[in-house]
Image (cartoon, rainbow, N blue to C red):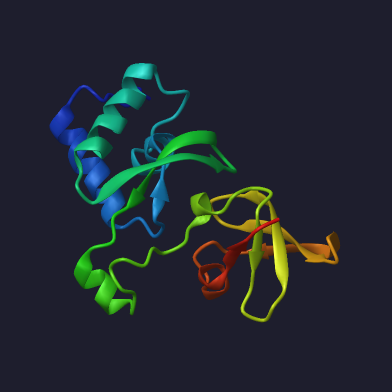
Length: 161
């Protein structure tokens, strides 16, 4: 089976666009596109990663999101979907209110839920925040997993620790 080639820029842009148009999440990294979007295998060469990154950089609907830890890909420079004004209105969000996703939570940070419970984030991943409830300054109970785009995650407010 031949290795995927990023040499054909037009084909690469079409394949990446097709993948991102149907992509269900708001954060992606070049490795995720390499493996899942392009169906490539093996470790990509630096030139391959750079080519995918260049495609992401040219798109106006994705913007750099900084470093995000992925369960499958490790720590990667990532991109987040830009929320368009009409999409914001459809979702009931004002344009200036950001939708919280995992890279907006600080590992070790304390966040207060609307019911008054306080959680410490111990691990932030693409598909969940792993937290412990804090009572009297101590972690209590079992680990709580919160999906980073859930209503609960969106309602969490950072508090001083």
